[in-house]
Image 1 (cartoon, rainbow, N blue to C red):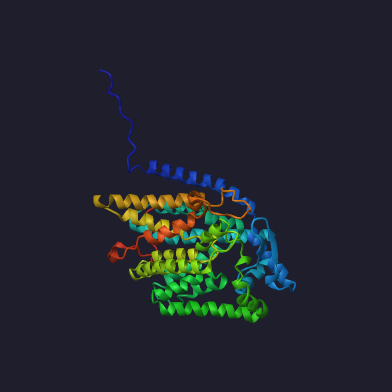
Image 2 (spheres, rainbow, N blue to C red):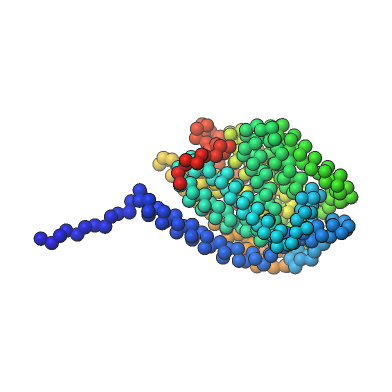
Length: 427
C-alpha cells in the first residue's frame, strides 16, 4: 500500500520561529522606509541650527543678539527668537565646528526619542503583555518616521530635549510628589516659552507646589540670563517677545495653530485679534478642563497630552516640528483600543484603533514634507484647501474631544505611567 502523505507541520500561534521572522520583517520594512521619508527634508540642511550658531558668532563679537537676521526664501527674514536663557546654553556650541554641533544635536534628539518612547510604551507593554523588545523597536522607528521628528532632526531643532524635561516632570516627578517636581517644566519654559502652558496645567490640576517650583525655576533661569546679558534680556522681554513677525509668516502652512488657520483666510492681512483670542479662550478652557479631569482620574499622560495639544493650538506660531503631542495621543488610543474587551465594545475598539491608525498615517505623511506650498501667500479658497492646509489643527481639535479619559476605571485597570516594568517582562 502506498504510504499516506504526511502533512507539513503547521505554523501555529505558538511558533516562536515564525513570530521572530515576522517581527524581523516588520522592523526591516520600517527601517527601509525611513530614508525615503527623510530624503525630502534633507534640503533643510539643519537650517535652524545654523541660524542659532551664526547668531552666537554674531553675539560673541559684540553685536546685539536680537539684531541678527538671515534671509529666507519662504519666510523673508528670520531672526534669533529664543529667550536669552536659551542663548546662554547655545553659546558654547558656537565654539565647536558646525559638523560637530550637528552631530551632537542629532544624537541627542535620537536618544531623546528612544528614552521618551520607552517611557510611553513600557507601561503599555506590561499591561497588555506585548513582546517587549519588538514593540519598543517598532515604536521608536515609528516615532522617528513622524513628520515632527523628521523636521526636528533635519532643521536641527531642540524640541525633543524639551519633551524629555516635560515628560520626566509630569509623568514621574509630579505624580510621585518629588521635591524637584516642576523643575523640568520650569527649565523648558525658560528655554522656549511654549512649555509655559504646562504651568497652567499644574495650576488647573491644583498641583500648587509643583506650579510654584516651575514658575520659580523659569524665573531664576530668566534672571540668570538677565544678569549675564541685561541689555539683550530687556530687549527680548519688552519688544522682541511681542514681535510675532520675527518668527515667520503666520499664513504659511507649516504654522498649524488656530492663528495660522485664521491667517490663511485673511492673508496677506492678519486676522482679527479679538476673534482669535475668543477662539483660543474657548478651546483652551475646554482642553484644560478635560486635562484636569484626566489628572484627577490618575491619568497624567492623557492630561499632559491634552495640554500639549492646547498649547499647540493656542500659540500664534506652531511649526510642524513643535507638535510632538500626536505621539502620546496614538499610544493612548492604542491602549484604549486594546482595553476595549467584550462583544459590546467592538464598535468602540474599531473606532479607537481606526483613529490611532489614521493619526499615525497622517503624521507620518505630514503636511509640508511632500507638499510644494511655495513662497507665495497661502489663502484658503475652498473646503479642500481648508482640510489640506489645516490638517494638524483639525486633528488636534478632534483629539481634544475624542481622546479617552479613563475617569470611571478602577485603579487596577489603569496604566500606571509612573512605574516602568522590570527587566523580566516579555521579549
